[in-house]
Image 1 (cartoon, helix red, strand yellow):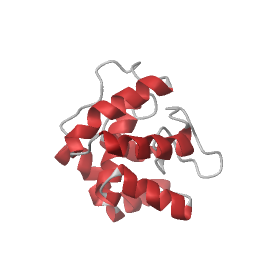
Image 2 (cartoon, rainbow, N blue to C red):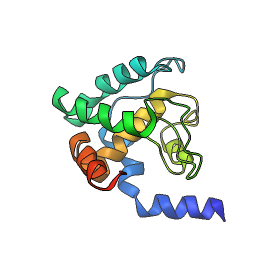
Image 3 (cartoon, helix red, strand yellow):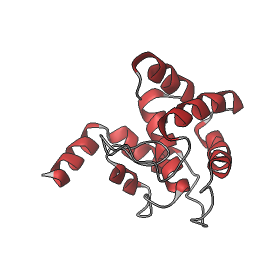
Length: 137
């Protein structure tokens, strides 16, 4: 049943799952150790944002959003929901649409998270506004 639920969730949000591959030429970093600290993760995210057409004005919204969600910790796990990683994907295994190293590679998580934001909200500032109004994104 959990596998089917994950499949159903993916089927309900095809944009989020497909966006990284279709609109983001940025691939996960070759070095899986890159970005394991918040400053490194932020640098990775900043470098990927232009591939979505977002400029630096969107970065403060992304920074605020993922500060709230995970503190930019690639190992962050919500004990009640099971949401995982920097973008707090629910379930975390959704990020396997980018790469199998989703649980250990901050770059994979960021790639997935930016694709999710792009597909669902259009921009980090729109995602942040939604989070501010309802407490989640």
